[in-house]
Structure formats: structure tokens, C-alpha cells
Length: 435
Image (tube, one colour):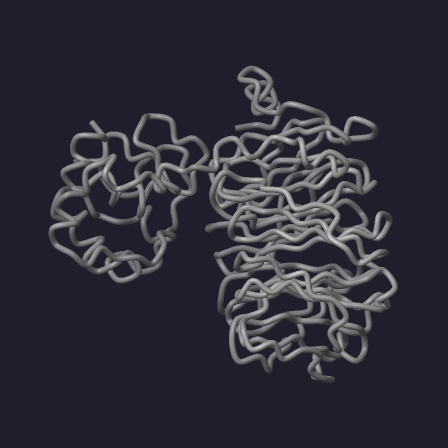
């Protein structure tokens, strides 16, 4: 669908609510339109906002209206702005993509052997870094097109990357419990900054690079001095794990998001907690970003929308409206077949005729339909050319073997339903619900 048509649709059904620029940024607002949870956010200096979503799309929001950047073949996990207005993204399809937003077209910078999780851009805008669950980071030349530099040495997934303020070094955080420093030109290991013992998920760096903050899977929120790595502050709450951080140098605030749906603001001038706000009814905070003036904090989680709160009024602000996803419904309120659908399928698929911008095609009319045949959905080459016809037998095989074995090369997540009774209940539910 063309951008103009999307813009008309968005206005017609009232998705985007409030402009995110100038004085109006100091209000609560939402950006709605994605078909999946929000995994990454980046705020531009002109008020334009980028959102990365589980629906395989990047949303580029101007005046509250989205333009969809399509091309990833799996969830988009991270987005970043370049100084010239282009967009960088990384996703579960292992690719790092560079978008020329005027045309909405992208070129693939390259691939990791695993999912791309976070991105950082060097201060001069000439290079980018990507963190991947393959256990490496990569350094990408955005100007001359030189081959990427691999940063390897961690013993588990790399969860976050940050450039030093002069762009000469790279900080990495890993599931192996360490934060390490590397030469950003050669990828050479320099030293270990932190050995935490539990996986480190996210980082924030002081404007003058005097300290580094990190959040870990055991719920720790800690600040260490640089270059020594000695602890200078601990803001751990009784919640876990920490999933996202953002820092605004102007207001000297660190935002911390956790798996319980809280956003904590730390005043790094006084080193005290300025606010601790429950942003969701349930579920995690996966993405955080400050508005350019530091007046608002943008957040994303399980809901299919980005939410933004004025920092000054967090105590009175509303929570995310729709984060109690259907798959969190208590088991007693649905039969086993519906429960299997909600747990395994509902994030990616709808049951009605409208696909609703989900990561997967609608399941409406599933039985008797040839695989890869829903008009307008960008199937993988493997599934688009498949001779599979969906039936009780083929759906059973799909979840018994797992999509990665039954349809190698498919975009479907690697998951199985090992119990024959659970598969039978799911099939019976789908037979009723997809008619």
C-alpha cells in the first residue's frame, strides 16, 4: 500500500493521537498502527520517531502519521538514525539494513549468523555497530563501504553496543556477564570493564564518559566509574530483569525499563531515583528513548503501540492501555485449544480476514488453503513455492516437527508443541475459529 493511502487510513481510523514535536512533546501520547510489540525506538532531532516492531516493520512517524519501511523477513529489533536522515535497522532475519527514507528503499549492509539485537552509530556518523545473539558485534562502514569488522571474544550473546564519545572505542554487553571495551577501528579487545556474573542486557554512557550504567538479567541496575569499572552507585529494585536503558545528557536522566513493566528515572546529577513509574499493566519494557529535549520518555513493550509520557508528570500519567495480551489470559478462562493458539500463534496471526499488519498472514480460511497463498503477504521463497495444503494432518506435522524442520527456510519461529493432545486441541480450535 502506498504511503498516501496509509496516511489516509491512519487518519480515518484515528490511530495516531498527538504530534511529537516542539512544546507538544510534553504531553502523553501514543503512536498506534503496528501489528506487533515494539522492540526498538529512536527519536530524531526534528521530532520524527522510529519504531521497530515484531511485525517485521520499521515505523517512521512524522506528525503522528506512520510511513512503513518494509523489507525485513522477521521481527525488527533495533533502529537508529544517521545524521543525514537515513535509517539503520537490525532484525531477527540476521540482517542489518540501511534505508534511504526518501524512497523508502533499503540495502542490506550485511548479515550476522544470528539475530541482530541492538545498534549504535558513531559520533561522526561514519560507522555503525550491531550487537547479535551470535556472540559477536560488527562494525559497519557507512561511508566507504569497506568490509565489516567482526568483534569477537564474548562467550555468549552480545546484547548491547555503545561507541565511546570520540568514536575510537566500542563498549559491548553480553549474556556472559561481562562488559568489554574494544578498538572500534580494528575490533581488537582492550580490556574487561565489568564482570557481573549474570547476563548484561543494556548500557547507558555519560555525556562526558565518566561513568557507564548497565542493567542485568538478575535485576541489577548499577553505575560504574570509567575507566576503572568500580561501582559508584546501585539502584537495584526488587524486580527483574532489566531490559532497556536510555540517557539524556541535557537533563542528566537515565531511564531504566524492566520485565515487570516499570520505568525508573535516575537523576545522575544527584544520583538519586527521580521517579519509579509502573508503565504497563503487565509485561516488559523492551525499548526506551528520550525526546530530543528530554521532556518526554518514549517506551515500547508487548502492546502494538509506542507510548510517551512527560517526564515531569510520570506520577499521574496513564499506563499502557492494552498490554494485557490475550496469551496472558488465565488458563481457566479458555479451553486448551484456544490456549495453545494464544501462546504459540496470536502474536503473529489473526483469525479474521484482516491480517492487521501482523508478522504472519491471517489464518482466516486456513483449512484447504495452499501454503504461501495469502495475497499481499511477503512470504519466504521456501513457503511461497511450497506444495503444502493446510489440513489437520499438515498442521499436526508443522508443530510436531517444528517449522524449521517441516519447512526449512520458513520465516516461522522455531517452536514445537510436543504433546499430541495439545496439537489435536489446537487443530480443533483452528477448525472452528478460522472458518
